[in-house]
Image (cartoon, rainbow, N blue to C red; front, top):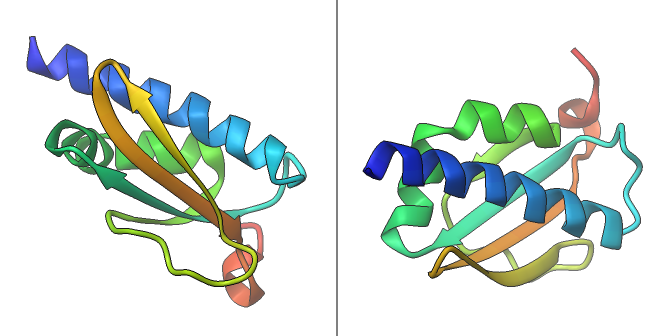
Length: 100
């Protein structure tokens, strides 16, 4: 069932993003900018469950694209239920980093 698969992929994306946050040394309260790229199911899950993903990970933005190649961007390739994904994040800066 596709809706259940997409929901599961979204939950697994959140899990992997949280691991990447921890490995990048970010604080639990740090807001992030997030990139997700990958197979069609990954992109569809990110699109349909974007609010859930951004809410759970404190992302101020979720871009369905390959991440920029610049200092401070932490990236990882992962496999989620047979689908390939690339996730990347950086600490949000300036006005994006403000709470509320």
